[in-house]
Length: 161
Image (cartoon, rainbow, N blue to C red):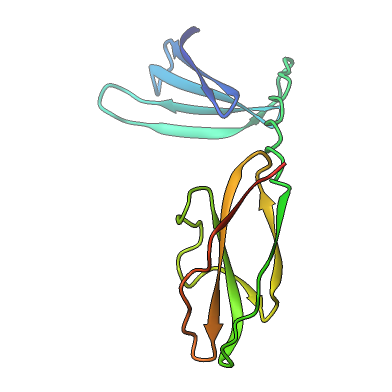
């Protein structure tokens, strides 16, 4: 038996071995062994030079055991920074709510216009899920009963601790 190649597939070893011999029906066979869930699965594909093939597969016992790959590292912790915003209510009687916007560059907000954080008719809001140590810029818009949105308020900024 001669090993033709070894590769890694999702952390598991794949061995390709070639057997040559005098089998009556198939003079050459190719075996693929893959370690899956602590079992070895053999796939045998063989044929003659004319392209004739056959295949068999199934679990087989092995005396050799390979430890499973280590688990992937945990994801980074979710951002935990917050910023408390407050503003003066609009004097326009048609205003039914507000939208808050934030981003890491002046005038460039993470939310597209019309998709800010909906605060209802509250004049304060806490933005959460922000990255500590980052400078953020904030603005608010007023929304009327027709869905029209005002211009952005004056922008304020804050470096999160």
